[in-house]
Image (cartoon, rainbow, N blue to C red; front, side):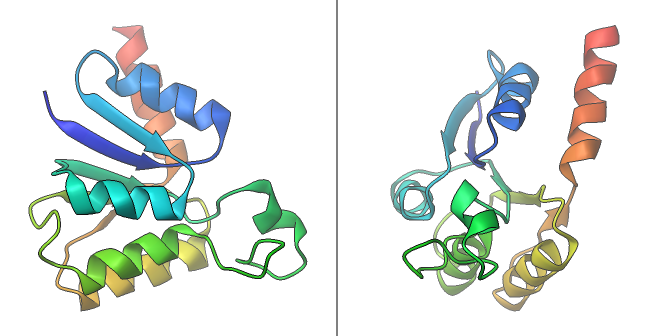
Length: 136
């Protein structure tokens, strides 16, 4: 059973991830940047799924990418941490599933610059995989 870290805040998406992977793999799901980084420091994951836009405050604070406290908390922070810490989870496959095109491209470039090989698989593509799986 592989361990998968999922950084996601949307309850509907989390439900779909659970439907796609539960019973097959061990899931660790969080919507907190600091918690994701804590898990990455202490656990070896086979796969890491990263969303960019996290928390409702990301959308309502008036400053894109920042919470009401003024502290940026997006998947980009986790991507940056992974890029700066190549010794952590070096063999993990990193999938950026964000629908935020500019955010996911920034995340991908950060990870590439850090020696990682991330893949972009937008969430709507993952939803299609689940649909196809459930039809069989």
